[in-house]
Image (tube, rainbow, N blue to C red; front, side, top):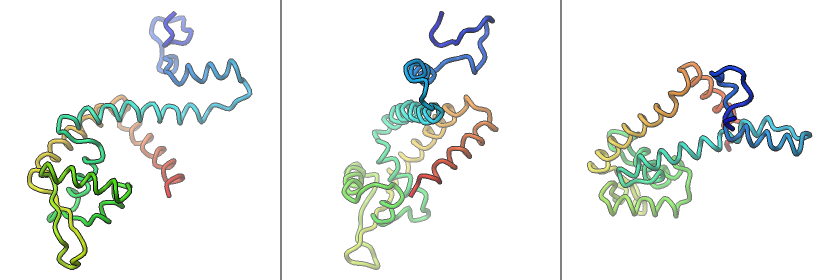
Length: 179
């Protein structure tokens, strides 16, 4: 019998009868430690597995634009602030949630490729403003279009109602654990 299916007498297994990797892991734990409560493992394990597959897909798509996720995040943060498409490094840092050193490295890489520019802030001689360049805008517009199409493709295994339910439940979890 195929390991992906639970015992079924019909030829067409239902969604609940199809086993995934988490079902197999939980099943093995239940055999060796039936005293364990594994409900949270079924949720968190699937979130972790989804994160792996989603990240792999996102990285493949962004590679077409010679971007990594962090660089995409910086460009996207700037793009969301029209019409100037400018932010200070502190503003960027709070949006992409990384250290100042990591942000500086990302900005350096993006600047070397002509996707962003840095200039002295008008209001503060010590301050810097990061600006999305015309080339950065063009690259990001294409990358966003493909990124959103990939997200839709991944989410389309769920109906629109199921997507809303999943989004609401995941939001509830995030709100409870985010700082």
